[in-house]
Every structure is written in C-alpha cells, then in structure tokens.
Length: 180
Image (cartoon, rainbow, N blue to C red; front, top):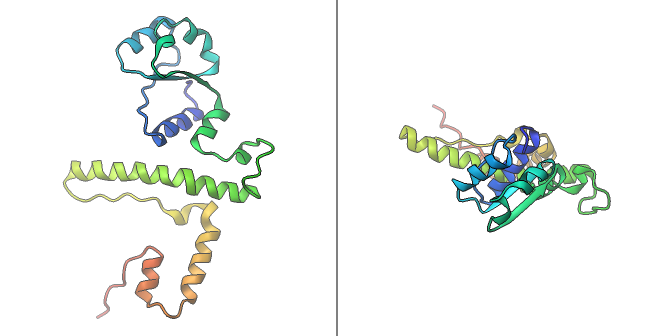
C-alpha cells in the first residue's frame, strides 16, 4: 500500500484480526516482491488495487497459501469496523443517525483497539523499566462520547444512596484521601 492515511486503517484492521503485518516497499518491482516473499512466511498478501499488474507479474504471490486480497480505502475501512453510514454508503440502516454511528465506531472499534495497544505498551514498558507503567485512554477527551459521560455524571450525582467514594469509583476515580 502507498504511504498514506489509509495504510493506518489496514495496520489496525490486521491488528484487530490478530494478524502480523509485514509491509513491503510500495515501489517494489515484481522481482523485488518475489525476493521479499521468498524470505518470509507470508500466508496472504493485501495490496492496493493500483498495484494489480505488479502483483500479477510476481511468481510467488500467485502461490500464497491464503491468497491475495486487493483492497481499496472503503473495503479497508469496512474491515476495520467503520460503520457504512460514516463512509457515505447509502442504504445502510444499522444506525438512526450519524451521531449514533460515530459513537458505535468509538465504542466497538477505536476504544478496544487503543486499549489493546496501550495494554501491550504498558506491559512492555513495565518489563523494560521494572516498575508498573499504566497507559490509559482518556475517555473524557472523546467528543463522540461526551453526551454519555454527562448522562453518567448526572445519574451518579443524583444517587443519594451512594457514598462519595462509591460515586468516585463509578466515575473511574480513586477514593478521596483522608483529611487531617
């Protein structure tokens, strides 16, 4: 794939699917493609549709165990979990409006991926530095989820049967420190 924003979509889609992505230089000739494929344990090759001629001319690409997949930007976004409504694809009635589709994208795709990546990074850094490192996504900073967060704050605030520490815990905060 060319070096562009869409490449990130493919990286994340592979990550979400549990695949290992090994990028090839976008400017490789068929001979370069064969050389790279010969030194790797590639099972499947994703490629941008405009590279069809070079992939077809490759001797090794034709024989990959899981085959070849030619994708454009829309297909990659759909594979990643982007709701069709956000891509401007007509006829998809999964969500009643853009706001609901956007919330779904954040809840079902972006946040789980970021949590997975930050969890792995936290583990790696913890092992590297010998102490616990905890990297988290700040959900309060996600505009698409602000309505839900405000609704939660109102519900928690009006719950008179909860202690202040229980309310803080529900909102993701620790207990208050004892005052002297």
